[in-house]
Image (cartoon, rainbow, N blue to C red; front, side, top):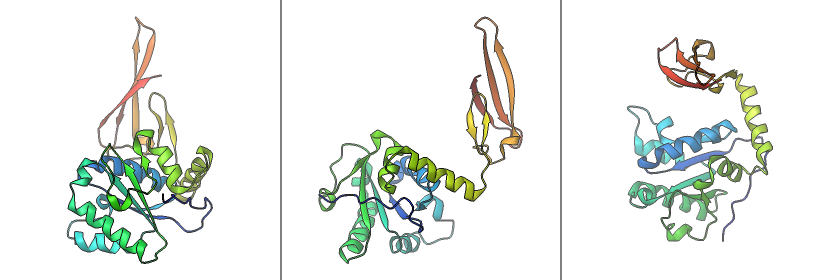
Length: 213
């Protein structure tokens, strides 16, 4: 069985990751890609890279020539996708040609893996995104992953703000406005003695929900 060799945590070069998926599994790809970016990985995810007017085939082909880690999000949807299979074949061709790359299957359901990667050690997303990120990046524990996140936040000069009833906030999830634009209205349930906050963004007017404080 092929093992997933861990990457050095202090590797000065950013890991280049290609996420192969079927469009019906895009939400899983987004969550995984976002977490990988947060620890410093250079992630290629089609929704983030291909713009109107770009050649889809050309963009994917270029990306497949430059990655060092290929993540195969495998599911019933992916098994029926000729596009996903073509991306996997391209990745395996690079691996067989002697390129120093890793191919990591990530099972999203019980669909059997393709025969060519059935012997590879795989990950299962039912254990959560964070454990998958630890395995992909080679973090020995949560502390190493959190240290990497802190380093990225420091480098990007990102300010976090804690908003009661919601938690840590970087920006409005709807428009990207800074936390300063998020306004809260306090509500009190006198019968139960509970206090809640209702949040909205003053920049875009979006209602953001809230919670008990």
